Image (tube, rainbow, N blue to C red):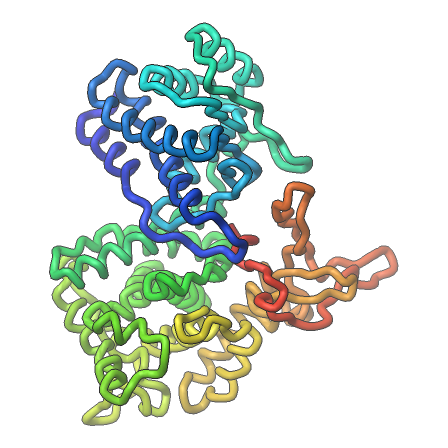
Length: 501
């Protein structure tokens, strides 16, 4: 049994509002999408708290009423409401719901719990009443995981309770997909997604609180940085794949997490201890925290900054140092962290900012973060540059400026990390297939032969995510596939991040 504190933690974690949506390239009905996201969150809450309280408990009433409001609004608008699981996506009346940052936990919970119970679709055919919804949720959550006759049992319970307005359908297992109940154990990919999205939400919370001059609790940020270190050590490509998620509407938060991942991967290659890696990860997460003190109209200006505005912008590393020195929950702050934030725009020849009164060597943390920061900024859409550089173009520019802006040895290490064909690059293969670089080969013989995800869809339009190792040969010793050239995914309307989610 859970104690009161655990119950409150479950409820609080379940009712976190959805705030940030990751934009997708396909058109969508934004109002339907908003209501759908709201519905997923409500279902998450109901399923979690139904495991704590019995169906007659007064504490449940508020959550059931709020859920009914969303469900019945959708039914009145659409005539019928279908929420369906298809592989790793949720569909509302055949429209795929977009992932959201703070709402990611709700999406993941619903997908996992329905799959474990082999339930694939719930259809509300007419307006629903409170008692109906209570009975349905309790019948659903108390199904035994992995039991083949769950659908029949659930349908029988709905019939016995005379609930005719709710219909349930089986989980459609796509050919080649593992059985749903094998999802009970989270793999590194699922943990990586969770850490990535949670960290974006947490850094947003910290920066928002600092902006509002409120208490900022960064203990969770420290814990997430430690989890990221563990993932980078255990399965680096998973987190590196997450950096393909680029959301320019929430640039500061998304960017901070991406920079932290790149920095950790570099630190791993420099053989940093786990303690030093954690410090580097936190430093990278907080490298732009000084921007919380920059006026929004300067940060989000769609055109070039004026001389006065640029002077304000250049103060953010120093402002970041002041903020971090006042974050008491960081505990004893290693000077490397403070100096790393101060240094991340200095450039190798010290021509960057802030301006120094006396020359000094740019710190190792500063040099690492500067490379990660520049690469992610160049490859991310921005308000003033909707189409970014491709990974290959960004690396070419950085190489051109390696002696002035970057540490040449660290830049060489970074290129080795992301590969000749960087992770997330769209490539054309000699088989006329398109591939997305998933993992570079670190064997000197096969630097131009990464592992790629083939760009292909099944009959439902879902990405197949089939892997191809370009070092693979046929019986005659010839390579089965080779890269001909890289392509710009924006020209082909391919959402790279979708293949890593």
